[in-house]
Length: 522
Ligand code: XMP
Image (cartoon, rainbow, N blue to C red; front, top):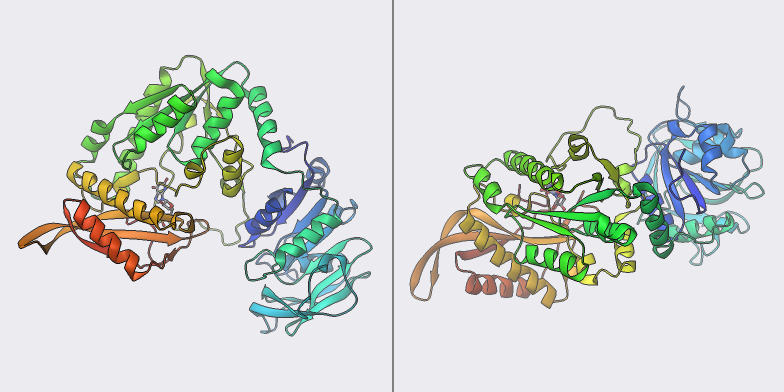
């Protein structure tokens, strides 16, 4: 096994399929602890020996330990002499394997907010808890522990969970019934802080250290070969490009495909920054005509995505073919894409939108991959970007979809509509920046609607397009809430758009959350 962060203290999270396992990892990374999530099937004794964790966390999960064949970690987790924290299902599996008892829920399941109170003298894991007599926690369980394993005692209880926190402090085994990683357990971070302190972590996982290691690893991996990196202007590919450039300089060439669906001034900004400010060799493929020509008459959203994805691959392949000796393709893959979370539900989930527009590129081109961000969460990529000196305004940019403005122009795309949309979007973003709201919002943009409406300006009748503004808050784009602008802000923005953008005479604000809506209009 090749370890991803060989020089760091490592924590292993054994995944039993909880919806919130990723949050455990994020909480730990925020504490500068390097951790990895692995599905329980992959955690064999040999794996454990190679990974050499300094501590282990057993995640929650939907199974019931009383069922035959329910998931287990290897016994070694409890014999290698490191602290172990079991959460929810992890608590039950721990009790069960160490000689306690778990009973199936008899309709007494506990879901949601609960309050725990201390049951006996202080536990090192709970330092900083109960300053207010009780702590709010988030419960989500059906089964419960009914008899403790030898060596364990109860340290906190809740009305529905007499074994809310149990521990064998001598062996540093801790088991909690609730989820300390979620937002609804407000003091959860303290619990993780205590756990990693007990395990002797020194907080050695910082982006400063990672930068140097990543540079060394890239040099090691690619040697004298040349690397191609597709730049989209987004944060991930930009950070990957700058990092790789620091590692191998001129051996890197970036390819920026301009499909004619970018925002106002976007192409100039990307080219200006990478070619001029960073001196990175950059091919700017100006293929607006090709893409917009192929999209003529196309109004189906998936058809648009497929057309753009296919042409993107063609153009990229052609441009990359001009770079002699290229052996590697750089991608800004992040850790959430890598985690192979356990699915107990089986079957594939329904595809709402085909997001992976350029999948399959490396195989098609016969290139090997360089993925220097594979171990990182998005917030870590931003921190690394700051380490590399990328401007804050760039690092904090809202996400922008691969198919660009095509999916913000429902129905048929025309050059006229794109030009109007660009201007409206620029005014909206300018308004948001002027009011200091940009960083509070996950994504904000304008969409141009495929409808003309009647208006009156001055003394005349107008018959122009309507536009919709969209602004949402989100943590990962999976769910989203509408941003609550004031009426004043919305009114001022509508006035500016109508005054400054010829072609729009009506502005609406989209107040649909996700679900049931999606963030983009298509
Ligand atoms: P939805 O619209 O599915 O968007 O709620 C969730 C997030 O994904 C982005 N998005 C895309 N990104 N290719 C991309 O690279 C796509 O086809 C695509 N569709 C949506 C969207 O901007 C939001 O951040």
